[in-house]
Image (cartoon, rainbow, N blue to C red; front, side, top):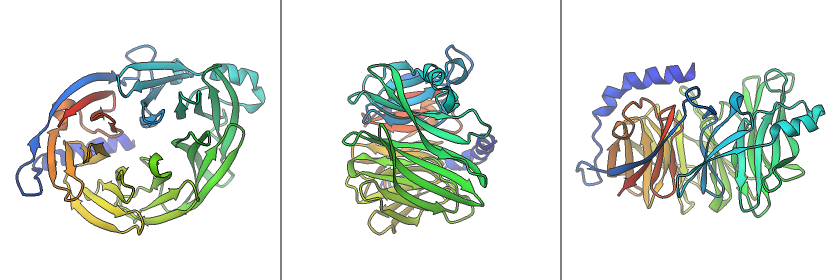
Length: 375
C-alpha cells in the first residue's frame, strides 16, 4: 500500500522534477557525469530459483566491505545474499536456522532469516534477526551464527510485544569489533507513542545503550557512524515535526533535534561535525551542526531523494530523476547524471545505496544497478 502510494506520487511529480536544472556554485549548468553499469543484480522475487526478498533495505556489513541485499524467505529460509563491494562478486550463504530451531523447540522460533543484523568475517560471526511463530511477531531475537563452525550458538531476546503494544521491531545499526557486539535499534508502538532502545548485543547478553520516546515512527534507518561511534535514528512524518536522535554509542547520550519532513536519506560528514538529511516533502537538503542540532544550511534540490553518501569529497544525493554530486560547502552541483540513463525503467529508487569506490547501488524495486560514476 505504501509503495503503491509512493509510486503514484512520484509519477505525478516526475514531470516537474525533470524541469529542475542543476547548477554549480557559479550558476553554470552542472556537467554530465560519465558512468559505467558494472552489474545488474535481479531482485525479482519469483523469476529465478532460489528466490529472495530485498526487504529490509540493503545495507553495508563486514566493515563496509560487503552489501547485504536480500534473504531467502520461503524458497530458502536460511539464505542470505551478499555482494562484495570491491569485486561485485555475489555470495549466497545459508544459515543453519532450521537446525537451530529443531535443537531448541522450546524457543518456538520461525527459521526464516528476517534480516542480517551484523556480519564480520574477521571475527567469524554473523547476527541474524529471527521472529517467533506467534501472530504479529510477539518476540524478536538476535541469533549469533558462528561462521567457522556453521552453527547458531544462541538466540537472545531483543524485544517482546506487550499487551498494549501494536508491534515490536528491530533494525540493524552496525558492529563494534572491539567489543564483539552487534548494535541494534529496537522499537515498539504503544498508545500513539514510539519507544526506542539502542542496544548492544554480545555473545551472551544484551546491554542497553540508550532509550528515548518519539512521536512518529522511525523509518529509512537507523544510520551508523563507525568512525565516531554514533548512530542516528530518524523519525518520518509528512505533516508533523519529526526529530532526529543522535546516539553516542560510548556514553549513551542522546541529542534530539528537528529534521525535515519525510527524511529518506541521511549521512554523516567524514569529519564528524556535520550531519546531512534530505527531506522529500520540501525536496530540501539540510546541513545540521552535530554539536548543536541546528540546521546551518537548507538548500532546495528539487528532486525526490532517497539516499545520501560520499564519492571523494562530493556529497551524493540519489534521486528519482538524477544522481547529484554536490560541493559539501556550497551545495552547488559539481556534476549530475539522469537516473533513467542508468535504469531506464526506474520510477522510484528507494533503498538505493552509495557504496565505497564511487559505486551507486541503484534500486528500482526489482534490480540493483551497480554503477561506477566516473568523475
